[in-house]
Structure formats: structure tokens, C-alpha cells
Length: 245
Length: 242
Image (cartoon, chains in turn purple, green):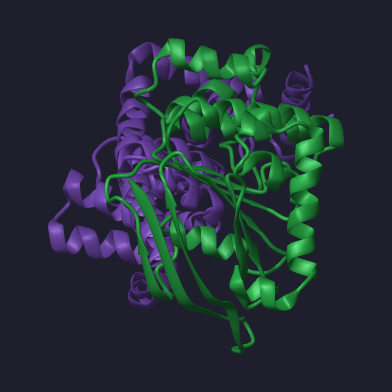
């Protein structure tokens, strides 16, 4: 209920804003909705949303898997931390645009280049978060696992991953938003489809309703993913915690 | 199966870089079926010694020999359960080979039947200790280590749990090492009481208790305890002979 109320407030602010700014600069919600429906009817909306979503999924999975592995290693092995740290700082401070442009120049305007560039942008933040998680692992439980000779897989599943799960969830949440922002830039610069490509088109035509129709549709998709996937997953992982009042 | 311990020295470096001697010189041996009790003042290095014996700490001078393939059951001072797994899962994860019959017998003795599906965060300390005990016994250990399993429980609960431990120890032939600072627990559970000095730990006395555990009533334990107390506090030459 509070979520619905919050959404209604957003619509109200938007509508009032459009009355003040004028329909040309900020079209009203019904105007955008009309464009959205037209794009959906023609199938374009779903085609472009699907293309972007596929890139987000691939780049996100790649960055999270690699980032978790590297972060864990850096949090546990001192030498790895020493060796990896300068790289990490470099990557963290490298602008997304530089990575994308370089990737397109070196690997051509290809799908692989786009996904790799997006993943490289997300990778360092995943590493940093998971490194903190690995540093915070409980030594007492580690000793318990050693004494009881738990096999590595069992230890990972029952001892290590549950301790890392809040860090994984934090990295996933910030990562999802980061990846979807960067994916649009990559699409704008060098892909013939996707939400970013459509926004490029809308920019060239100064078509604000089209621009809003695509960006809000994708925001809606992200919201659905968050509500239906991320939050239930988190709730399941933390069901052992005593509930806060 | 036999545990032989000969630790000549164990040093520990504090965060400030100072060296501390934790263990001065401790050597003893325990056979299967024997319950050895290490008794000493708080902070004398008992827990450090247990970590060495369990193979968690290799940075010491001396020698510890235990059968290579010995399964270890360890009851830590804090229960060290996995808070994100239920009571039953905690036991099963440590002892994947234990069958249902064995587990229910264990849960029965330790009065955990009603708590199988609870999470550790929902248990009292006394119950969490029982889960840690169940876990240690479920692996069918060859070498059982109990680090102050009765500390900070009220007297009645400690007595109940002590009886439960005694029942479980009787049921299986293994090397058992119990650490406590409570002479009462030592005398009621042990076959041998090894008295340790304050830090750095040395053995002050190694005293066998000959009366079988099951026949030790209140009178016998009191007598044994008095005897031990007399031996440590009494004649120093006699103490050296022990």
C-alpha cells in the first residue's frame, strides 16, 4: 500500500511539472503512455527491452561471478590483495565511457565488446564489496569447519556463502543499477538495438515522449526484477535472523 | 589408539609485538576409553592447548601424535553453530554419515527433540551447548575435545548436562579430553585429572581416579576432591613425586 501511494505521488508530481514546463519539454503521463502502447503494439518496445535485458543479464552475471571470486581471493590471501589493489583502484576510477570506447575500438562494434566493456565497469565494485565480506568471515566458524573436516564444497555452501550473502546482495543491488545505466551508453555508442539505441534515436529527433516511454519501461522492468527476484531471495536468505520489531 | 602430547613451549605474539609464553611444558598421554581432564586457572593456556591438539595451531615447539585418520569431535567454549542452519542441519552438516536412528537417539539423550527445526538464534545457551554436543557426538569421534562445556550455565542445568555428557562418554570408546576450571566437574567426569599451573602452563600433577564413574556418588566425589585438594595444597615434596 505505501508503495502504491508513493507511485501515485510520483505521477502527480510529474503531471503538475508537465503543466508548468509545457508539453514540449515534459510531456504528461497520458502522452507518454500513448507512445508506450504504440511501441508495444508494433513489438519494437519488447524487442529493444529484450535486447537490453539480455545484455544486462550477461554482463551482470559475468561481473558478479568474476568479482566474487577475485574479491574472495583478495580478502583471504594477502599477496593477492597486494597485487590486485593497484589494478582495482585503476579500474574503479576509469570512466565507463573510456572503457566502452576503447572496447569498441579494439574489438570492433560487436556484442562481445559491448558486454565485456559493461562487465569491466561493474567488476571493481563487486570485487571491493566481496573483499570486505571475505575479510569479515568468522574465524571461529572456519576453525569449526576445519576440525569437523568438512569437505570444501560443503564448507563453501554452509559456512562461507551464508556469511557472504549480505555482501553479495549489496553488490548485486548496486551492480544491477550500475549495469543498466552503463548498458545504455554502450548501446547508444555502438549497437543497432536496445533501449540505449532507441534513446539515441529519440535524442536526434528531440522526441521526448519516445525517450520517456523507453526509459520508464525499462525502469519498470528493473522494479519488477527487484520486487519479484531480489527481495524474495534476500528474505529467504535472512529468514534465520531474529526479526526486527 | 593413543594420544601423546609433548609440548615444550608455545609463544604468542600480541598485537603490540610483545612475546608471551602461553605453555611452558606439558606432556601427557591418553588412551582410548580414557577421559582426561585438564584443570587450571582461567587464562592459563588451556584453550590454546586444545587448538594445538585439534590441529588448528601448528606454531609450537614440541610434538603431538594422534592417529592420522582420527575423527575429531570438538565442543568449543562458545557453541559455534551455523546461525543460518537449523539445529538438525547443523548436526547433519558436520556428520553427513550419521543415520536417522543415531541422530534421534542423540537428540533424545540431549533433550533436543522439540528443537530440531529451530535456528540457533532461537535457543538458550544451554540448548545451544547441547546442539554443539550433539554435533560432536554425531561424527562418532575417535578423539573428543570438550572445552568448558558447562561454563556459564546455572548449577542445576550444568548438573543435568554433566550427566548427559557422562552417559554419552560411557557409550563410546574414544580418547576424551575435557577442559574445565571446575574441580567438581573434573572429579565427576574424569578418569584422570591433570592440574595445570597459571600461565605459562605446566603440569602440576597428573592424578588418576580409580573409582569407576558410574559408582561415584556425592560422598565419593567429595572424598576424591578433598584428596586432590590435599595433594595440591599440602605437602610440596609429595606433589613433586606425583
